[in-house]
Length: 160
Image (cartoon, rainbow, N blue to C red; front, side, top):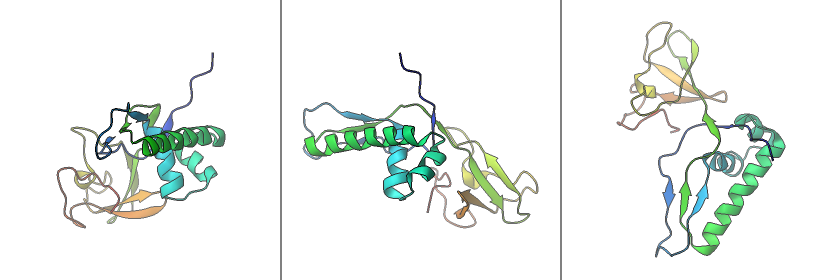
């Protein structure tokens, strides 16, 4: 019996979890796990090399390659056969969000937002209580908060 694979880390869960081809077919759906989608995002969308992708997900290079290969195979099957794609489940953990206060330069982590949790725009600096902050994504500063952009009820410090 094979051992259970390590959890892969993903940046955030996704909003849209179902893709259905036009003229929905009777084919069964293709199920893609969240860590598989994260592997595709890191490698194919962001263009990171395999070592960076594996480090970001907290898995070995070999494990990352297996996750990516499985995802690409499922996506190809869905596209070529006109199957719906369902994105759900998997073996993953969600990364903490990292913020930097624009007032006192304090850097801290927050747990991922979830239903009923605090979204980025309402989190205050634990050191000085200021709302003005930036989100740090792998050293890249991204705007975060109502003072920088209009917020919506689903705003969660997503990439702008």
